[in-house]
Structure formats: structure tokens, C-alpha cells
Length: 212
Image (cartoon, rainbow, N blue to C red; front, side, top):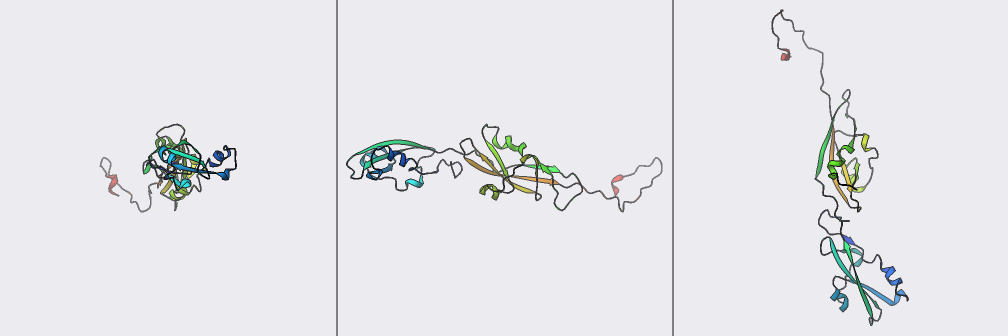
């Protein structure tokens, strides 16, 4: 999971399968040492092991081969192997999504509110790619913290107007990317019948109805 957008680098715990490797040795795991290296030559020589193996950040983008050396505690015998670490990129998203706008459906209130179908933006957000999940949040902060997820995105009622929603897109690999989308309720125009003078004209005359 690329935690820094689209740069192709991420943090790995190289020791995740270390217990299984030691169990395969057939002896006391305490009698063996496991070390990780960025090259086969370093693994053979036992030099320049990766120090931060539990929080390792790949040094080449997207894919890198890691070498592992298992040796006895006296370092008289060893064997080596390798595995690859892969960084899956999240979906690249625009900074913001085209807003959703709806006209108010009744008398103007302090906070005009309407039910929005947020899901009509799903295809625009994902580009129609299969396997991606779009999740909406009341704010960008909620999206970043994965809190207060909108559970009814097809009938979401705004809580402020306008409102900036947080959007999280999850890829089939579980990678997440974020953007924002504004929703807005447009207030109905106000037409007042008070204090509008009566316009009288003679038959056949023309009148400018816009004068008031």
C-alpha cells in the first residue's frame, strides 16, 4: 500500500515470515540468525545487512528483490534465498470532484437541505474501472481518519450548505486514495407580492412589466 500517493515507495516489515523460516530449520530457533540484504553478494559476504528490517522502505520504486540469509549463531554455516516486495499504487484522483448541485424544494430555511445521491459520481471518480470502492464522509477529516462514514450515500442529506465531503477510493489491492467533493443546495428565488403597485394602462397601449 503506497502511503505517500503515487511515488512507488512504502514501508515493509521484512520479518513478517521470519518465525516460519526459523521453524523450518528443524532445530532451536535461538540457534539461528536471520538477516536481510539488498543484494545477493552482500548476503553471501554477510555485510551491510538491513538494520531497520521491521520498518524498511524500498529503495527502488514499485518492486525490489530482498535477500535473506539464515546462519547458525557461530556464523559457520548459512543459506540464503530471496523474495520480492511490491508496492501497489492507489488510484490517482483529482484534487476535487465536480460538485453536486440541487435546487431547494421548499421555503428557504436557515440551512437549506436536500437529499443527494452521491453515488452518481462513482463512475466519474473511478473512471469506470472495475473493483474500486468509493466511500463518502461528511468531511475530509473524517475520510482521513475513516470515521463517520456515510452509510446512505444514495440519499445523503447535507448538514451545512455548501458542504465539502471527503471521498475515499479503495483499490482491489486495498490501497486508498482521497479527494473532496462539494455539495450545494441552491435557495429558491424569493418573489414578494407586497408593495408591488398596480399597473393600469389604456386598451391598446404597451406596458413594460419589468419596471418594478
